[in-house]
Structures are given as C-alpha cells and as structure tokens.
Amino acid sequence: MYQMKMADDKIIEGDVDLISTLPDVILQDILCFIPTKLAITTSLLSRRWRHVWCDIPSISLDVDTLTAASVNETLTRYKATKTKSFHLIITTMMGNIPHIDSWIEGAMSRDVENLSLDFLHHYYKYKLPDFFYYTYSFKQLDITILDLSKFLRLRILEVIRHLPVQGPRKILAPHIHCLKLHDSQLSCTLVDVASLTEANLEMSPRSLNREFNGDFLQGMVLKMLEKLKNAEKLTLGRNFTGILSLAEIHGVPFPMFKVKALTLDTEICQYIIPGIESLLQNSPELEKLTVVEGRARFYMPVEFLDKYLKSQGFNVNKCWRSKDGASWNKYCKDLKSEHVASLVELVLKNTEKLDKMVVLLDDHFLKFKIEDVVVPTLPHNNNITIVLSSTNKPMT
Image (cartoon, rainbow, N blue to C red; front, side, top):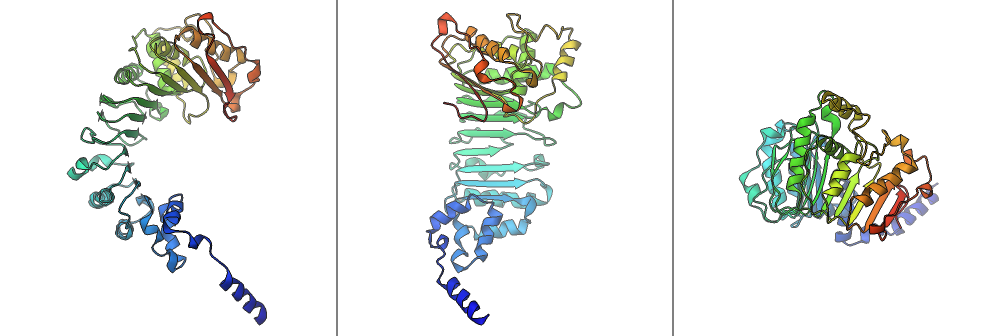
C-alpha cells in the first residue's frame, strides 16, 4: 500500500498541467465561455490561477445569484483595462439601486465596447446617471430604457421587452444602424432612427391573453414600418406579419420600402399571406427573400385574428385568401407541397428584381417530400434562384 501511494505521488508530481502552461491571454479567452461566477472559482485551483480571471475581456454579473457586496468585491478585483463585453442582470431592482451607478461606472472606466443592462423588474424607478450619456466607447448597447440620441458611436440596439416589465414608450436612436425590437405589446414609438439600415421586428403574444386591440396594433406596426422604409435589410416575425395582414385586409396603405433583403421568420399559413403580398408589392428593390419556419417560440393564437375580423364584419372564410383567390392552410401542420408552390408563385408574381428566394421548412410539421414541390416559373423572372430545404439540412 505504501509503495503504491509513493508511486502515485510520483506520477502526480511528474504530470504536466498543459492547460496551466498556456499564456494568460488564451486562458482568459477560454474563461469567457463560462459564467463569470464559475470563472472566478478557478482562482482556487492553484497560485497560477489565482489572478487569471481578473483580466478576462468579457464579464457577466447576475445580481440575482450574487449579493451587492460580492459584486462590489468582484469589480474591485477585476483589473482589465479594456473590456469587450459587460453584462449586468438585475431582476430585483429596489435593493440594488444604490449600487447600480458605481457598477456601470466601473464598466465604463474600462472602455467597454458592448454594454448589456438587463433590468427586468421595476427599472422605471431607476434613472441612469448623467455620466452614462457622455461616454464614447460603446460600439454596441443592449438595454431596455433610455434616449440614445447622445450615443454618437452606437451602431446596434436591441430592445427586448418581457412581461410584466413596462417597456420604453419612445426610442430616439438617430445613430444606430441595426435595431432588434421584440416588444410584447408593440408600444414603442420609433421617434428617430434616421441612420437605420437593418431591423428585426417581432411582438410577443403573451400580453394578448386578455385583450386583443387590433386597431392599435395595426397602427403601431405601420408607424414602425414608415420609420424603417429606408432600411435595406428587414426581418419580420410571424406575429408582426399577422398584424400586417390585418392592415392589408382593412385596406390600410403600406409605405414604399427600399429593402433589398427580406427575411420572414414565420410558418406558412393563411394568416400571413395578405401581409406578405403587400410587403412584396411595396418593395420594388427586393433582391432576396428568405422564409424560415420553426424559429419562433411563441405564436399569437390565430383565434385572436379571426375573432377581431368577425367583430369588424369580415367573412373569415374569404378574407384570408390571396388576391388571386387561392386558399391556404390554416395551421402549419396542414401545410402541403402545393401551398409551398403557391407561395413561390405569389412571390414571383409580386417581385421584379428578385435574384434569390430561400424557403426553409420546419421538419416537425413536414409531411411531404421537398422534391415533390412543383416550382412554378414565370417568363419575366425565370432566372431567379429558388432554394427549398428543411431546417435540419444545410443550404447548398
């Protein structure tokens, strides 16, 4: 037993810890791929690791799993002079308000490039400090509140609103180039997004369980699109496109768009067809269209749309048809090869400069072979590349 123990000791003593021999900069990049709280625990491994985490280029602090004192201690020990990403998550706001300014200031003092502030509850009781508006280091900001007109270098803005948090009422971001807005109630007014070239818009159905205000939602989506009419890349979700369909059925005029690449994250069904038709007809510069099924997590119940139209005196058995009178499947599980062919034909009829169309079908509901889809061709656009595939296959 004693000899075996000695042999084991020699083996351990002679082993080479290859990871620990790596340069700090490589170890720090590796630690960025795990939660910061876990990265800090590597300081217990050995003297070699004691201070490695202190200079990681990206840091994420979830205050719900940490005390304010531990966050303060972490930022005191954090020595990086240049931070690529700083992510602060606060769900329970009230007890942390006295510390938030210093935490943000700590991030900004390290010339942070990408700042993400998730204030998930009662953040309206907190106002960002004045010094926050005068930083020039940001390249990307992910935050749910504030007027961004003073952020001259900000190029990317993500506004993700989750219930029960109250979202921003107005967005002033004249310098951003890319906007991702996923709002539970579409209550944001885009006051100034003059430099915008790319946008991703969707609404969550979670707020519609008790009341569906179709008139309000139609007005909001069209006001947003009016502000985005100069964008060259647009991505629209299933729920957003469904509201556009309501507007089209009501005869509400759409703005003209300069979009060249349009992506629709939506199932193929009757509830998105009227909206798609109007989008295509008002997008004369469109060069690429991508339709992706199955990426959205929450679809608005179609019963809301039918109930609203019935209350407005519409015949729901007729109004969801495309303008050529074609009928469509009501649910994605009823999708047939002829519906995909009809979608391709609808696109070809309503576009002039289209070069490529990509349709990615959701494998979970696919009941036919993609090879069975008869792709139509029209004389004026027979040079278009059409790609049909399933979501689990790479595109060629």
